[in-house]
Length: 376
Image (cartoon, rainbow, N blue to C red; front, side, top):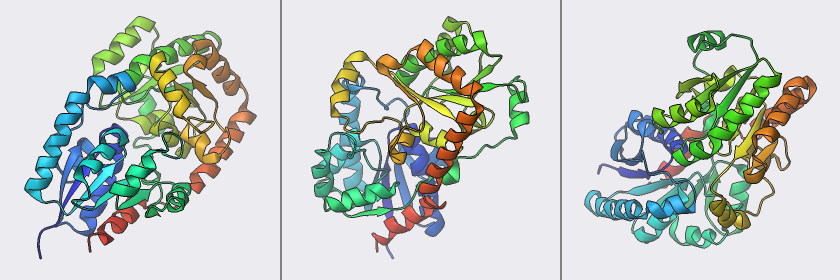
């Protein structure tokens, strides 16, 4: 029997996390399958052959995307050549829709293409559904409502559940982790999750730190930043030095940071779902270049930006987006919640319901089975 070859393409830290889980599940079903990948450490650890490392290609806003266009054109050409050379049996595109949908179009149905982790076409730029319908063989989606959405538009889709349910758990005992960072176990702790891209950290971390300073004026609290391994240390250090706040930082320990926190300040994105799964009260914060915001905002057709609120269909966590994302606004709400234990408990109950709605554990394995069935 001929050796099966699969290409996996992702472009963000969150995509690499989901793709890594998927690759590991594929290998557990059929160890003989060769997986070639555009990705990062999670895919490498899962046994994929990394043909392109994604460090440095994630984008933050329209103008950042414009600057990186030559990189994306070069990557697309490289992948098209690899596709001809290696004769892949299947391509799995993971999130990263700005690039992946264009790559699917360039492949032009020359091999089956499965899309895992759907673009948010139900929230913005609905025109992308036409590209999906034409060039994607199957959508494997994380949310039940996405399956219904795609079927309504005549696209083959199957719901696998959310892989984060298997991934999101602390690795270290809360007391041990606090002590390892020089934090006081049991003291009011606020975790800062400013995102996984340089642009996000530049825009969001400073306002989070200013808000932390205002919280500290009125509450005896301690602060920890969950650092993304995708972004180099000097950027964080520069921002921390400018704010002059005594704050701890932990790399690649997001779930441990959340585990010791009473409240988290979280950049909109995958981390909002991670905080929700851990049932940790949090505030959603997002800031981008004002021009980028003015370009993107009219395209968004849903009333919320945080995935927790979108899935719940109502506001269960406060959102501070763009012009509302000011240090006083964030600090006032954080202080109010830290003092109102009843409201914190209510938020945790809503987050518990949301977690239950994501389906059972084992999503990566279910997704792998769905995808490998399409190879038969």
